[in-house]
Length: 433
Image (cartoon, rainbow, N blue to C red; front, side, top):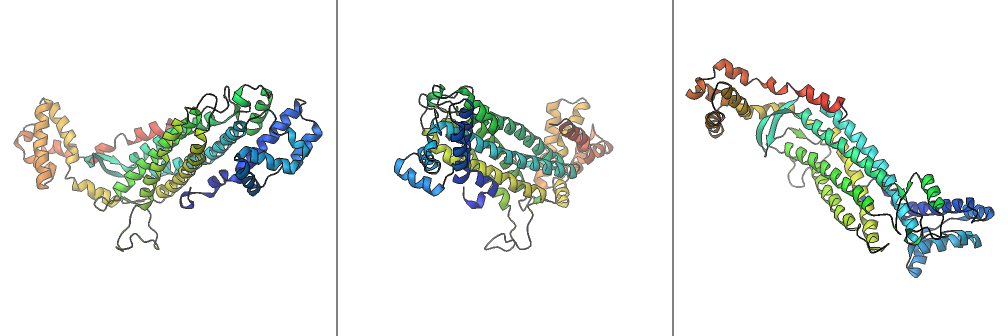
């Protein structure tokens, strides 16, 4: 992934140097296990552990000749270890190293991503509590609906990301597997003890049945969850973008004094971070389909999955880490315009009370269909002529038959919409939803 959308700690996981370190660790751990089985002499193991090392450039040079990355790596080890290198990689196949390494890299990435997600969830929780009673107009289809609070908006986001966390933890567990089972996965030339030993040392579990590769449904599951997480990031990003529109202006991304919003128009303050997150989410989701297709391989193995994973796995994980980190900053520094929220409520002319009027009329014995026609007729006048809805209701002959001015005043009490705010917060926060 390009540096613009990368963070160093995730990038390091996917560097060639880290990859070869993991390969070396896998090979040495396998040698330790085979030494315990009496297959490798103890003295040879000592020499291997002391001398085994690699040089990235040398591996690259060898690979140009042999056209095989694992063989190039093993050749470089042999150059450093000497005759005892004959015990390295005994009974193993390339996929034992490649797939187990990929599991380690994905697990390392997930640990960081999960940590970022936990921090984001806490920031959202704090912001939701801060604006628990910050009342604003809710919208459906982009049109004024009924009042809600900005805290409730964020509470929904909090619950969504909590679900993402739960899914991601499960997905990390699912990909934390090791396969050291040799060609076609039958353990014909290597004892299952080696796999168990390596898995335990790496904090993994043995893959119950691997053929020659770890089943790719595990990887597809993880990246499906990453795709859902990206969609959740886009979901809140789009909400912020809509709320920052000039005619809405209920929230704004934090804007530095030195920041410039447009090369042409000095007045501009654009929601560039949220827009950026929307775009990145598209890229992350695009990684899901190729990894789904990787599940279908020929017989006990082929390498059609390899090129996909070399590109998609690091890029998607680096991008989701970057996105979570960026969203943390957006939410933490979000500027909430309470005055504009109140003004937008006022600009509705009280139309958000239409359902309350409808329900009160039905309580007076009117059919729902007739009550709906009465309220809709008055509401359309309010829309078209920009006149206060309550005023028009007070003048309407049909309405006056059933609802007094005092009745309407009670109906138009804004606090009515706050009565279950505490209930919602308690249900989500106290019940660990």
